[in-house]
Length: 41
Image (cartoon, rainbow, N blue to C red; front, side, top):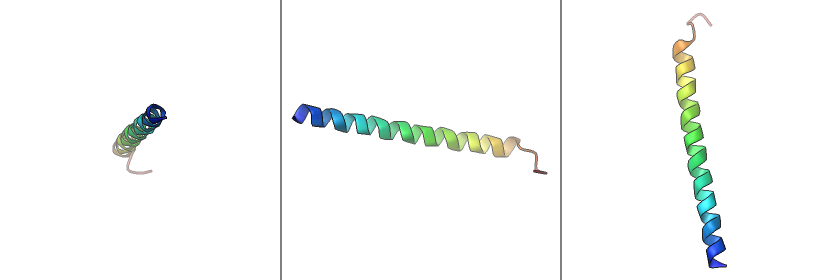
């Protein structure tokens, strides 16, 4: 049981890191859109 609990924690940790990277990338894309968007919009 201890091994499966560690595996579950590892999967949750990887998922959390993946979500953090996704949000970081999304923020970078939003910044680029704001910079490239014409000011009249």
